[in-house]
Amino acid sequence: MNMSPDATAPLLAVRDVGKRFAAVQALANVNLTFRAGEIHALLGENGAGKSTLMHVLAGLLRPDTGTILVDGCAVRFASARAAQQAGIGMVHQHFTLVDALSVAENLALSLTESRRFRFRAEVTAEQARALAERVGLELGSPQTPVAQLAVGACQRLEILKALAGGGRVLILDEPTAVLTPQEVRPLFMMLRQLRDQGRLVIFITHKLREVKAVADRVTVMRRGRVVGTYAANAVSESHLAEHMVGTIAAAPRGERPNRLAGAVLLQVAEVSAHDARGVAALQSVSFEVGAGEILGIAGVDGNGQRELFEVLVGLTRPHGGTISVGGRRITEFNPRAALAAGIGHIPPDRQREGLILSMTVQENFLLNRNLLDRFSHRRMLHARAARRFAADLAEQYALRFASLDAPVRSLSGGNQQRLVVARTLAEQPQVLVTVNPTRGLDFAAAAAVSDALQAVAGLGCAVVVISTDLDEVLDLSDRVRVLSRGRLSAPLQPPVDLEQLGLLMAGAA
Image (cartoon, rainbow, N blue to C red; front, top):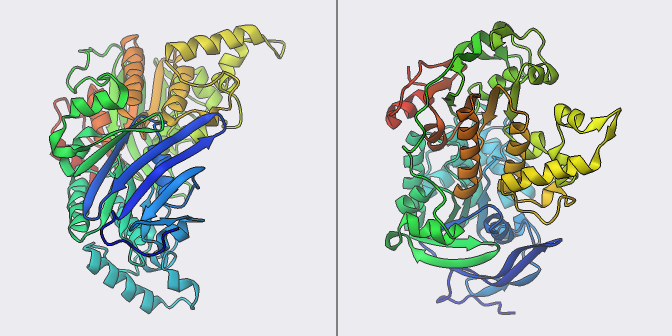
């Protein structure tokens, strides 16, 4: 093994890296070179191997075959701590901060020297200021509790943690997923500044526009293999799309069907609710959705989206106000009552709230009281009919999997989401409530989910899309409203001004 750094070698490289999970070959002979002083985007469908490769580089997974090279030296990472000590840090899509601790205390968790000595608040605060200044991040007071930080500030702190200890490689997983347009611009400026300081920035994204806006090079992966690496300024979005999936699967924005809302199906009047801490999260929220209409509710995470979803699907009883479906007021607030009223839902977290990962694909297709009743008699399941139902839905929604008897955890994120959507729409709900339905999906999987939502609206369902992704809201919605600090804005009609929408999301009146 070569132990002396090679000054002429690339900062980071992988050679013939392979990784298998049971019957799934997640990575197959991957060869890639990453340079110091570049922003390198990684594109691909769900299941293409992007996250697996990044987890290998970040020390979260060990490759079955192949070699990782840092400065030309072969390395093996036993943990994420070992990768960070080699200068590689990763910021995940879901933040890993401790809300009850301050900025400085969270940063101390990533400083290697803080494990050997007693924690001293003033020393760590000074370390935080110095590190933020060195990498060009605006962090604010190190004493601020993380619970009080805006989403953009939380992301900056995560980046600072990843770079703590002299990190030279920053890996970002879908970094713009939770940001307003006003927060995306400074993020891109910061990434360019890190690049200009000689660091390597690798980011996973499903947004082709982001690749063109900030990346120097882009690598496309498909089914665990590298399709190609290109200069970002020399390749078109359509060319990248074709390399990702073989065909151009996403229709450009603006080709949304022209729909006229029918009679009001969902009526929410003066609804208020508290969060888990007993703090007011929704304040007199009122809106209506007609048959065949998609209402988009935009907003930054933590502004009442979770509570609105839980009230609508019967998980939480509101502290005031009324909800009616088809003119009939809902008096009981539990999931069974919501289902009986005709409200279906696609939850915000498919793995924790939509699926049981240890159960099979077929079993997950039947995880619904009404569907189970449809294929059961005296508590006995009609196995043949249930299997045919699952197979037909899988074919209709183009799911890719090894077998109906495979554990659902073996499916890619996009296929897991298609399963949840297929199961929910098989209910033929009058009202559909969904939160971030395409989050974390590649554009082909996202297009399939969007098409399904458009189709169910075309059949007369009233659809509510609660989302932090502006592209998603604008692509899907007939009308848009913004939820900020528990209050709902007036409706905005397309074409919606992106700047105005971003300001409303940021809390402007």
